[in-house]
Each structure stands twice: as C-alpha cells, then as structure tokens.
Amino acid sequence: MNDKTRTPDYLFEASWEVCNKVGGIYTVLSTKAHTLQEIFHDKVIFIGPDVWADKEIADFSEEETLFADWKNHAATTDNLKLKIGRWKVPGTPPVILVDFKPFFADRDSLFYAMWNDFQVDSMHAYGDYDESCIFAYAVGKVIESFYHYYQLENKAVTALFNEWMLGMGALYVKKQVPAIATLFTTHATSIGRSIAGNNKALYAYMDGYNGDQMAHELNMEAKHSLEKQVAHQVDCFTTVSDITAIECRQLLDKEPDIVTPNGFERNFVPTGKTYTNKRKEARTLLVKVAEKLTGTTIAPDALLVATSGRYEYRNKGIDVFIEAMNRVKTSGRLQQEVIAFVMVPAWVRAARADLKEALDKDLPITTPMQAPFVTHWLNEMENDKVLNHLMHIGFTNTSSDKLKIVFVPCYLDEQDGIFNQYYYDLLIGMDATVFPSYYEPWGYTPLESIAFGIPTITTNLAGFGMWAMKNVSGNDIQEGVAVIERTDFNYFDVADAIANHILSLTQKGEKERAGIKSNCLSLAEKAEWSRFITHYQAAFQLALVRKDERNC
Image (cartoon, rainbow, N blue to C red; front, side, top):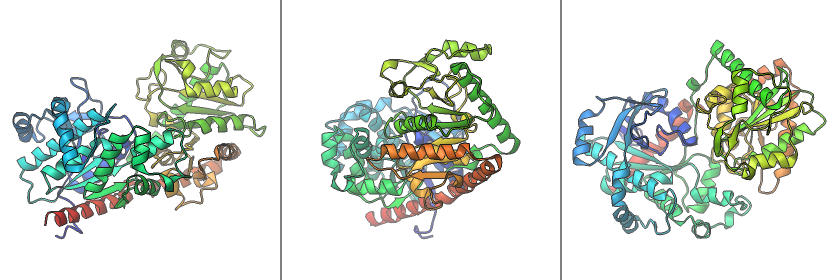
C-alpha cells in the first residue's frame, strides 16, 4: 500500500503531559487517545516522564505483561528504567513512563551533538530547559530501543513530539533512527508566548517581529533555537490553529505543513439523568460556598459564570473578565443575581479553615467572612493580581451586590480541601463561561464548555474562536459561542462586549436557554476527534512520504 494512503503501523506520541496533568496538552492527548486507539489498536504508544518515583500515579495502571520482554532488555542493555502500563482515560492506550534522571550525566555531550548536528544553541539555557531536554533525549532512546528490539525496520513507524520540550527527542530519532518518520507539534511558540507575556503588542506588529532578535531581547534564545530547528528538521511540522500558523511563519520562519486543530471526546461528558444530577450537585456546592463566604442567601436561579485556565493574567484575559464583571455589577440593568467564579490556580498556602468549618458543619453565616471573595489563603496575598484587582475595583460581596465574585485559586483535583471536585464536576454547574484571551493558540476551555452544553464567550485571538466563526456568526450568545473581536488596544471595548452578553443571558427564559444548550452541543459535535483526527492522518502520511524521500 502506498504511504500516501496508508495508516502507520506504529505511532509513538511523546509529551511532558502524558499521565501528567499540568496543562492543556494533557487534555489534547487524553481526549485524542480513544480515537487513536480505534485506529491503531494498541500500536499507538504514549511516552511520558516518570516524575513520581514510588508514589501512586492517579491515571496510570501498570501492566506487568505489556512489552515485558523488551522492558527487561531495555533495562539491562540501554539503561532505561521504565514503567509500562495503560493510561486510565477512554481508550486506555499503552503508556511508557521513563525515568530520565540517569541521563543527566549525558547533558554536555547531548547539547554538543545537538549544536554540531542541528545548530541548536543551548548556551543561554536556564530554568526548565535542561530537564525538558534530558527527558526528550530519554524518549528518543526509548523509541530507538523499542524499534530495534521488535525489528520494525519493515514497518511504517511515525513518532510525534509535542512542544519544544520534546524537540531534542525528535532530533535524536531523526539522527539515530532515520527510518522513523518524525512529526513535531508546537501548541504555542515559545517566543510568541513570551512577547505576549511581556506586554508587547504581538498582533499589531507581527509583520515586523524577527523571532531570533526577540529571543535575544527576551532571554529566550535556547528554547527558541531548539523549537525553530526542530520545526525545520522534522518530516512534518504542525500547529493547532490558523492563528498560531501565522505566528510560526513569522517567528520560526517556517510555515506549518498541516494545521491539526484540537478536538474533544463526548465520552468525557455525562448524559441523561447523570448529567442532570451532576449539574444539580455542582450548582448546590458552588452556591453554598458563595453563601458561606459572603454571609448571604443566594437565589436558586442565580446565573453562575466562570473563567478558568492557567494564571496568565493578561494572556488568558483574567484582567478583562474582572473588569467585565464589574461592568455587569454597576450597569443598572442587572435584574438576576450573578455569581462569577475565577477558577485559576495560584500560589495556595492552605484551604480556609473558617470556610471549611462553615461548609462541613453547615454553620449559619450572616455576615461576610474576612476577604469574602477567596476560597483559599494564598502566599503573599498582597501581591496577587486577582485579589489586588478585585480590591482596586471595589468588590465587597455584600448582600446588596447583585453580582458577587469568588476567586478559586486551587487546582481542582478532588483534594483542594473546599470543593474536593474535579474541574469538569464544577464546570457542569455553570450557566456561562468567559475566556477573553489575548494569547490563546487553541483554547480548550471554551470547547470544553460547549461540550458540556454551557454557552461561552471567547475572542478572535483564540484558535478556537477563529474556528467557531467558520460555523457561527460569533455575534450572539444565543448561538452557543460569542466571539469578541480583540486587538492589542481595545481592552475596554472587550469588557463592554462581555458585559452585554452576560446581561443578555440574564434575560433569557428557560426555553431560550434550552435552545442555547442545544446549539452548544451541535457545535461541539463538529469539533469531536472523530472529525478532527483526519488532519493528523494527513500529517502521518506526509511524514512517511518525506521520510522516504530523505532516505532515498
């Protein structure tokens, strides 16, 4: 069968976030796993870092018989200390977790080889660069060992590496096992994120930016050098959205070969009575926490609104969300009570003992608690941007406020001490979500929201927002997704637009909200992995063709 039409016999996919829930790429991979398993039938193998030592791994199930013969060989012959099992997500694909720490001794020789072979400049490396690159190197050795042990020379083998952190793995495989077709996905360029994070106007001056120059200016030379060289060296370079493709072309001097948008799996969303019960439970808990904090009784039909994601204050639009909620509160047009939640992990010191006691004992609270808008005490609270913004604007969460705001600064992992629920188990209770991102290569949070039937507000600077506008006008929250035009300079216009959409939702009746939910689910269906996986299949095929061309 011709490589242009065939599915690879084996796919290795490597990421720092395999079985390691630290960011959005975890969601990409864990939801994609089911569809890949249907295609590859246990010949898709995820590779992640063993960062747990002897601790239990929550979503990994070790399987002693899986690749057992090779595991022993790899340990004795290749010095690879591995845990092999399955990822406890739909599809339960095979997973290899590698202990990369023994390879730190090879760091200098690795960095020299990467410079000598691929001109990757690691001279100015700092922070997480060394750890990431050593892990990537270990991944390369895992793939090399597996490939030779199982004699895959006559098989079509592809290896997909996610983000700059896995770049050296891709380069290692290209050099050591050239018969493997290599792919590299950048979910956000390191230099683009840095430009945005340093409060520079990324979009207005995009055509004028030089990636190498900006890397020097922002002290990002090592990561940028690695990412750029990998993008140019692999058989197929992909990114996750049209907006990030523009960024890659300008800052990495490389147009992505294929855009592979991020999908979602409906099997992550409960249905029927389970959905109804979980939504009711979530609303009850969210309202109860808000009531204890604020010392007031909240109406059962209060509109619950949330934003969430990483604590990138400007990039994720957390600042403009707070501004918009203040405009809702002071609009003079608000008839329905609104509770706004900022669900963004910060530097938590501890769950509030007073709030925990009030919840556990269901104590009657008739006056606002101290700092009645935060569920956990933080380290250096005086320096926290969310709390400072809330106090600067003048939020008090008193009974007279029709809009109250609650900062949930913890990881929602069932162990935070207050909610003790996963994020999805609280998301399902919301009536709307807002993600007014300034820098958002894709945007899983709004996609997750509509998959749960909850209308969302995003921007045209998010990859998801750009995709959504191919299916809806983006002008009316009634469609399930509202997409606000955002530029480098229209912060207050964005806040006004968000406020107007939220105010319009407060005026919708039960029948209209049911229609909105239906629109959300219909749009989410168009973004399921069963549809988006075709982009990956095209990428695999292109990589195999180019692998053959370079090996001629």
